[in-house]
Image 1 (tube, one colour):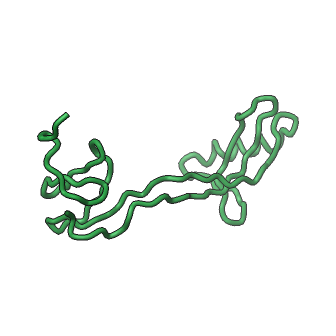
Image 2 (tube, one colour; image 1 turned 90 degrees about the vertical axis):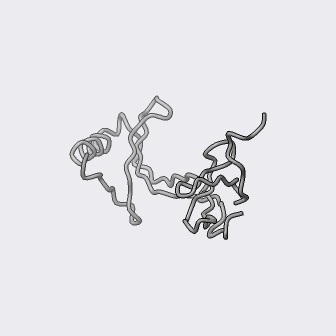
Amino acid sequence: MVRRILSERKAVTDREKRIEFDLRGHEGAGATFAADDSWNVVFDPRYEEAQRNTYEYCASHPNEYDGPFRRVIEHTRVEDAVAECECGKRIELWDQYLGASECPCCGRWHNLFGQTLVDPKYWED
């Protein structure tokens, strides 16, 4: 068994603000841009020129695009549990192989609850 669970596995919901334009007559098509907390468009510095041109085109062609719409997009993900292995190293308990994961330091295998398992090569069908 791991020495202790440092943080349990949990669902985490991320929310991001987006400014979006919908292409008329094409459901699900359009353009989307990141927004800050005040709903200002935030361009990625690597693609700023292209993103700015697209944003300006959408905003200046209301006959083609509806918007801009302020939308909050939510994504829910599972954060793996974090534990302290018997060897003292901090590890994540994740589904590496059939619900078990190997400590990269000592090679011990644990299930998602932190119980120590025999090496999967010795598992039976």
